[in-house]
Length: 301
Image (tube, rainbow, N blue to C red):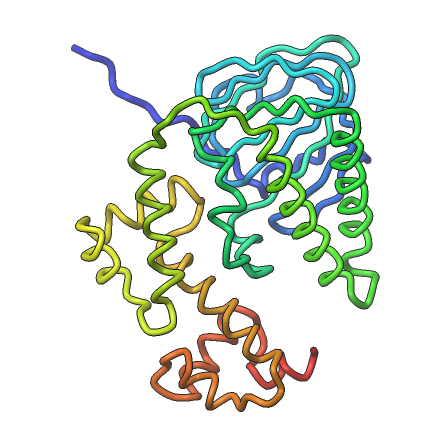
């Protein structure tokens, strides 16, 4: 009898934070940055695993061999690797004294800070179309190192600084935009085709960007894409770490925050613009996702 197929275990970001690697790590819920971490053998990294977080690795010393989607990549100083949550990952080998800096964050964290409208285009390099290994120049490695150091400082000051949250969010945006620019030079295509599931998620996200103001029903999006709602949700979750409904809500929430930034718009007008049945329903939706009513959020701006 053929053996049963088993799924790679999912390593949660919460576990990563609970097992702090070193004093060089700064972390809050859903986000962490570690600087110049000396590598040691530890679970689950030496076996195949998937994660619920995005990871960006910059090699700072030595040579490290990573397995990503069952392909081995030998990375040396100033090399950068990117790994999506659904990618099968493994730390295969490293030389004595090897170290790296790591940024990791979950899809929930990215949704919480508000996704840019062009997020799919910005982070396309995480798809299987491109090699996860970037051989950075010394100048560009220094640029990413500086971004990581700033994020580390922002994370440490997250609860102490009166605008710690905002500074951290803007610093992460800055890193993502810098990487999107660098990807044009360093993300080398390895396949002319993306996987069917990745293509589905791209099509779904593009559809949501166009229709989220008046359409928030997962079933209708699935119908447009000629698939079942269950398959859509499972596929989106596998690729992004978030459900289809959460992706839709993220776009609605981002637009709501943008509109609330405009003091000339009443909350009733914003609720109507986003096609909520009434202001009360919009208020409940907004508070469920942010912890603040629209009025309270606006007063904090």
